Amino acid sequence: QTEKNKTRYTNDNSYKQIPIIYSKEQEMLYQITNNIIIQISNT
Image (cartoon, rainbow, N blue to C red; front, side, top):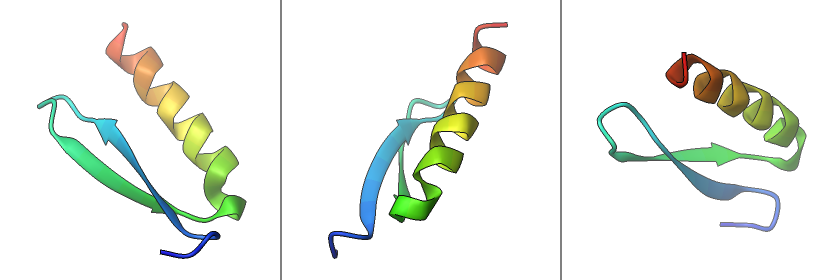
């Protein structure tokens, strides 16, 4: 792993930890996607 590429974990509906590999350029997209998933889960 480099400083530019990191691994982040999120929980899916099965509560399994899924690694999400992203770069700094993808950080905003990741946050937006994660917020959408949270909103759908809370519906």
